View 1 (cartoon, one colour):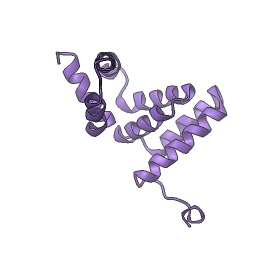
View 2 (cartoon, rainbow, N blue to C red):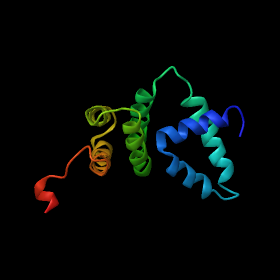
View 3 (cartoon, rainbow, N blue to C red):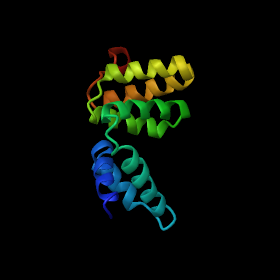
View 4 (cartoon, one colour):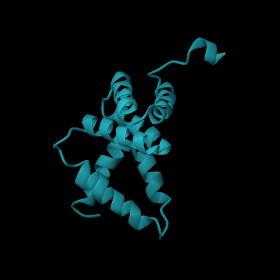
Amino acid sequence: MDEVLDPAMQVRRAVLGAEYVDRAVANASAFTAPFQTFVTRYAWGECWLDDTLDRRTRSLLTLSIMTVLGQRDEIRLHVRGALTNGCTPDEIAATLKNVAVYAGVAAAVAAVNIANEELVASGLQSVPEEVAK
């Protein structure tokens, strides 16, 4: 590591969870390892270490972008990251409504469903009684 990668990796672990990041690093191959370094250096170093936006804002912005791009796995990951960064379920819902209006209802519906699964898994949302039966 170096002076950019060390703090970038700390932020990456803080937002996404050490278990997720450690698994991604451990599963890196000779082909994918340089990309892991690239992502850590630029996404988590240059972007997430820039304190112009706080982590909550950056989480909601990232969630919006992943929704527009239809990146379902990244939506799931960044819903968890948003919760870790102190975003509330209401803020996540409001962000996804904003995406629906400005970027498309279909993309936002998929993200709402994924976000709901993550909120249920984290205990922040309950499953309706009819569904639980």
